[in-house]
Amino acid sequence: MAEDKGSARGIKISDTMLKALAALIVITLIAAVFVVPKYGKVFKAYAAARSEYKAAQASYEAVEQKNSDLSQKLEEMEGMKAETDALSAEVFKLAAKTEKEIQEGTSTKKICYITLDDGPYNKGKDFLALFNKYGVKATFFLTTANGDKLPDQADLSARSMYPEYIKYGHTIGNHTYSHDYGQGGIYSSAEAFMNAVNNQQKFTEEATGGAYTPKIIRFPGGSGEAGANADDIKEALRKAGLGWVDWTVDSGDSWGSDTASADLIKSNVREAAKDQKIMVILFHEWSKDSLEAMPSVINYLSKQGYIFLPLFPESVMVQK
Image (tube, rainbow, N blue to C red; front, side, top):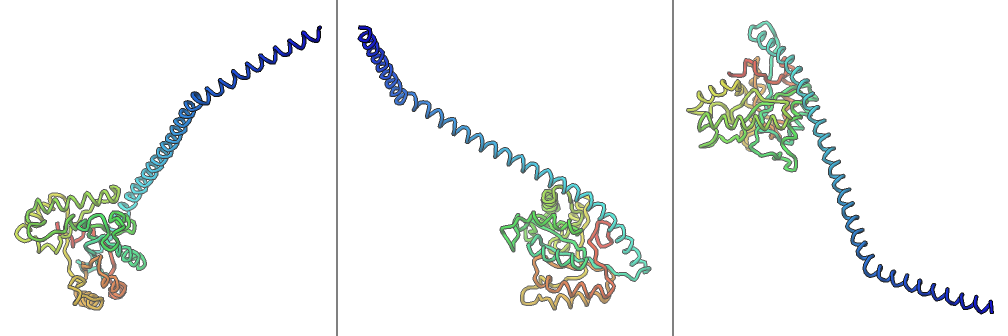
């Protein structure tokens, strides 16, 4: 009888377990139908939010890196400005002394100021490399008439060239922002001209990170193009503390494709060298003929006793 009770009790426990198991199955099914999808959505939302957070964090780090890079570049520009100012002051002091000695006849030296108009051009890099090779310093009169793109390589920004000029110790001059000297253009009034000058000043300062402000202007086409408003324009420049310069030698590189050539340029320079102890030669940065002729020009003038200097505000060749 004891075994029968135990056996009956065992059957009763089994029923309980079966009921509990059935209840567990029901709960599991309910969870599968209602709870799991809900938490699945929550999990997906959490995963998406986490992904967005990581993306935002990466973006923030990228911005921080960019800010760091910009700060470093600004520091480099400021350092470049200090070095450039110090070097320029020393060079210009010696140049002014040499000019005075030449004019007084106490020096056998001669000075050549090589100037290149209408840049920046990508070809300017070739001129810079050439000048660096020969130890020549020049003056680049720049304009933004072509926009912020290099005409001979439009995928590059014109701004990228500006630090290159000052890095190699050259002078940057202002050739006006628009270079528009047609009817109704920059020579229509002193105000119109100064607007073109000031806009180019601003562009140069921005392109060099504030490291450079031109002090010398070159009139597009030369000062003779200013016409009836020439005196007013020159007075406006003087009040702004700016000087201007034309040229004493036209290389001829802009005389048209049927006329201009490397041989013509060399001939024009050699002829001028006969009687000029201080010369300012007009070249153009876009000219392949000038680039081709430049080594011969430099070698010839060097043998004639010329030294090559960048223009500076106190030069006797700069009008004020």
